[in-house]
Length: 103
Image (cartoon, rainbow, N blue to C red):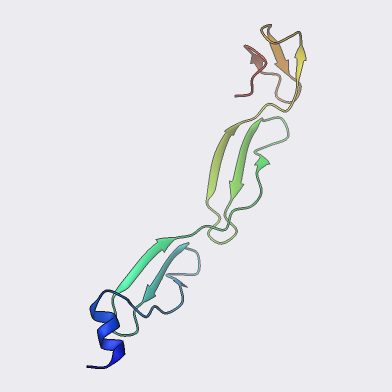
């Protein structure tokens, strides 16, 4: 039994590089070059957050590889109105806000 057999027998694999399953999928697979066992994972390449539209405060990001879109929630950049606990209106989407917090 050689060293490679011993190392593999105790649970160490000699993995190939990660490869995409298809051109438009972020699913990746790699194979042990010794016994052909495979591992799978999903790895997106996300863009920076951006607003969904000019008059929306919903932020999204898009995967460069598979073009999947993920919503990151709502972020109101600024508001018109009084102090912390008064009603405010978002300057961007004009939504009525309950207090000074984003969300």
